[in-house]
Image (cartoon, rainbow, N blue to C red; front, side, top):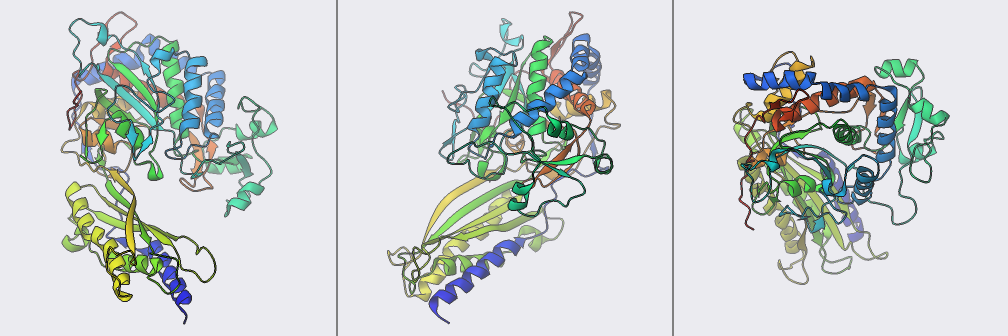
Length: 574
């Protein structure tokens, strides 16, 4: 067997291992149901929920959004926004369109738009994450609190309640270099099987059309896609279609409707006490590294803590779940670099394969200490190599991605200590095989390409103001029948505020009859009942106003459910 054949075999081994290695048991990432822990909701929150939900101004907003015209406007806005590609760390096109609509169409003045085209929030101390700007899109519903002579603030920032959903989507992974970047929204009858390849998806003849301004064209295809169904069975029987577009389920319907809610609050003069900040956040998916939330919460990746520079007192995410525990992760992208492109020198694929083999031997705390230990997992997620520059030469470099997860920082640190040395061990083994010294110009060298951090968090109690408002708004509107909090855990934008100390809870503003393929090129959905969107908007609005406080239509004030100083794990120095 020649040396090039050996490298090919080793690369194949690395690829197979990359697809199969996972340490420990799978991490639960959804709340347990129907069990859980009951929250102790204060009487003041119960009273506030009832008054806010029934307030004439709030009811007028709900009635307005319940019309056919409003349902159509929400649907069209979603279709027009979701077709704008928004890979993690390249969200500027979608953020720019949201910024444009906030001022030109949704009724906001420029000073109510908190974010800028260059990605800077002037009040934050974290505007660059992983060396890149952060393209959030945020607008503020200004409250009355700042005008009080006794108003408290944190270094000039008055209290805020945040409602957020992310605008980045896994696919496409990169913006196109030229031409129209817009995504084609394909329509497929249920009778046909779900596509298996990107080529099959591209070959579907039916798709939605958009005019030069990016507005959806209301033709026969639009009418077909706009049909409303209760579930997949009804859609299949009633001539529904799968609507293929990345972000259909995760999570542009919720994020788009968050801005609908913001515009509706503005239109109906909903006046909170504390400011309410509504954001489309960047960087939740893939290598986004939660950049959007790290900007909003001043999260310092090296220090591992957040300064909360905007003084956020509660966080309402729109990724669904209603959970309080969050799976943290460390992610490494390591490059194994060959010293020169010779076929008979140290091999980058061989070094990577050796590292994978060593990682496969690592035992997690769950493996070592049994099922009662915090669940800790690791995965070799992707292994890839550069092609040789020409036949007969060696592979210049290979890249390996490894992901470690746990709900506990201490177990994450333990697994990191076990895995991180394996990268160098793989390089050292290959160098030794060829008689090379580590660190020499003739040996395999390592380069850290990227490091990702999602902070872990386990709640000591289910009782905080965001959970209370989230649960009671559901109880008030008949969505929930008990104040139970699930015992599961998730990996969401909310990792950052929870770790920073800010109370958090999750909702959804979407309504889909069916869908599948989240994070895949074939992500699809079918339109659900618009009334469900309105019910969910009513709940999110009620919860946000419980925390922020509210100027009711009768002239009374519902006081904020929490004090004016948000929590933080690091103080800002200015």
